[in-house]
Length: 182
Length: 329
Image (cartoon, rainbow over all chains, first blue to last red; front, side, top):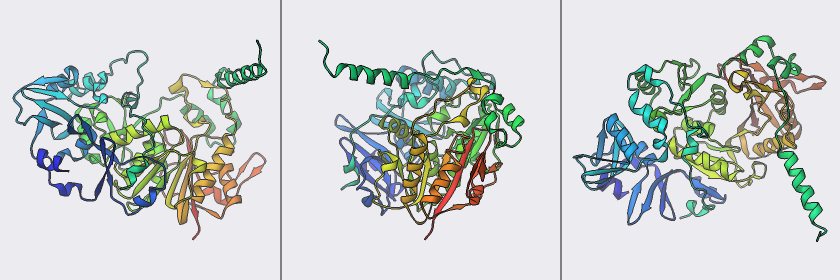
């Protein structure tokens, strides 16, 4: 949790009532409950929300976790305009003078935490989930600000599912009963 | 050289191919397709008319991330025309959003496109934040995430599905929606271990899915759906196991999205005959019809009238059957 305190200046009381589970190189956050140990008798696939993933020597916070807890960050967050976010999503990186230190940062759109990016000044590299790379999402996010006409949905290429979940697949890991064991 | 095993294997393959081949059915108008339910469905002509309409888009607000008011304002600033579904403060009806999975708010999981009847089903479970809840047939996770939302991301939701591939979709949805109180398992529902007991069990069983058919959505309605062998037996086995997993005083909700009384009232009747179960009234304010107490020559327990049948002409959404069952202390 030091990552969230040191890097993002979060008050760790934000995480009161949660506990962490480690499996392989990933850390999951789950709401504390006295009945969780008893559930370890089940063959558990996963618990709670993926919080951190080991990338090389570093721990990378997931965008899903930052969307949930990122509003409590005091530093190392970048507020982008819709146009900058579009560019970040489309090109994978943008350049600029962002008030952050090198490392993982939180991307915000207005007051909304959107996800994770990597700051390598002057570059900002997208670490947003694949869902954001769905062309429809990116286009609509940025072109239809207050403009009713632009809400018309662009046609999907043939064979592309309308269900965004199909673009956002998780790995099917082996049963992870140890997640519920200390 | 022909071995003794080859004919057997080829026969098996041929049988498998036959089972997997799509049903050869001609499209029929809804009036003909559902004529066998004419006596059962109130205002049958209005029901048939409703099947020609497009399915409205309902957006369930993810209150784990933003309030309904915030979300509504945010989407309306984008030019969306939204109406709050009056019976619940969780659902917005979007008139001009044919593909709800597109605005960036979807990627941010501020809302989740979900049929209104599916929301009603989860509301009927009425979980409390301290509950231990089991969703026995969980994927793709819309109702599961709503149950977690109703529990304010507290307590524990055990989300189970028999299919690993479907669990991938479930996990992605739970992650996107910011759910932190789930434990995901992969058992055949009817064999879920009896290690512990749950305050609430929700079992949305596999069914013949007649209630999801709309000419306004699919273009045509197939004349028949190929019956899945063993489906009714599977539904009953799931329901029995769901009941056995309840703690005394606990409550289960059984739901399907089909009209067929055999899969609905028939399953509940079977449970009442097998276990000391009690049907409870559903205290929600949505248009519906009562459960059947008679279908053709079959009589059902009078308490089954407390179950709900939601028809598309009553609540403009897909059809659902739901029953609340308690286990006596």
